[in-house]
Image (cartoon, rainbow, N blue to C red; front, side, top):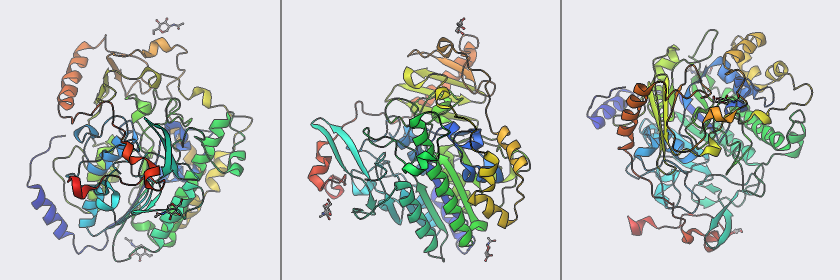
Length: 547
Ligand SMILES: *[C@@H]1O[C@H](CO)[C@@H](O)[C@H](O)[C@H]1NC(C)=O
Ligand SMILES: *[C@@H]1O[C@H](CO)[C@@H](O)[C@H](O)[C@H]1NC(C)=O
Ligand SMILES: *[C@@H]1O[C@H](CO)[C@@H](O)[C@H](O)[C@H]1NC(C)=O
């Protein structure tokens, strides 16, 4: 995509003016799951983890089957909020740890700031994770009217604490806030807590303003190491068809997420907002089957995990639903999207102007029309770990030090075990809340037809070779894949197509040179220690002194 340079401020101001009297700006509800794997939604084919409510939004909206993200939380959220690749913000690589003084640079303008200019009420419920050491980094300083949720990477599902290993040993503190105040009063399972907060905001919204809600769940991210997976016991019991115990817990966590989506959709219906609300459901990045922040997610049959540039790390579950999206038989939007595209895409949906100087492109019109006009290239640069990847057209080049343990094929295979007959998917669809809601709106809903749609959305790479050597997991390797023909990245073509390697290498080098380098290793600030702050992870640096 080529950008022309305009007078950014002027174009924006005129566009804002033209639309100033338009009362019909759509509401936007952006739901983000945390570390949800590719195979952890049933619209991608899982017979084990059923997500009928989420699936129905995909079937009756647009399934973003080529939705790409950065490979980890902070980078991917920073890209969504700014429309810029994380490496241009110094946000690439390992996410912000809870004792770290880092955030999206303060001169960046974020999505909620743009939406506020268009008259939106802006709310964040749930995770932030793009800066919390100083008040100036917090959501309420950066365009959100309100924030209820956690500021760092994850929290315990019932106690809302996060642990950290400082040089002095392990410490822990509360990370749940109502704007600037620690939310000591809250009780309950965090997915429910966030859902109830979202429902309250929907119900008691200012009806004179269009409404923007970013609902960023903690689920199904792992919690602290002593109890990484947490779900209400009765729901875990309902997952007895799942072979492995951890995976049962995980399936129950995802079930809670699916229920949350259904409650939000139902609330939008009750408030008569469904005919004017854009609903997005995405994962921030791929699942973490093994290693640090392991949550037993599965990216099957894609290769690699969260924090790797392989498809399992960066090709994430995603969908967008809006009343004007009507795809006939195949719910797949054929284009390619990256996290950076949300900002221009949602602004276009909101009737806003064009933003210059960003990496994202507006895909709203293409998604509405259901054509394949989209981005041609996307990059994944992590100079903290030491790798870079570029996908240009059908080819993808990966170069540098990927972590072998995050890069293997066959991840997730051993998690797929189902005992006996899995629950009926058809019944789950028919009994779901979203099914009933859509039926009331008059959408045609034929379950057999949905089963066909599901097949179209399932990636089949055939039998994975039972042979890791063909997956080439050694470090410091250059690999080239044809992502269109080999989405599971099993055949390295770098030796066969050296001229393609050269071309992609030239392009990724240009991008690499644009980066704001990361400091290695990250700095964990002992002054953040919760025992110094009434056992909370509060802001510990006073901006008024340092800025
Ligand atoms: C949505 O439906 C409500 C209630 O039926 C109606 O008042 C409103 O004008 C509709 N909005 C749009 C954009 O169609
Ligand atoms: C494993 O893969 C390599 C590389 O593709 C191949 O040369 C080798 O024969 C395979 N081994 C087995 C046992 O299939
Ligand atoms: C300190 O923490 C306790 C909970 O442990 C809370 O009840 C109390 O209000 C907090 N004090 C202040 C000043 O925030």
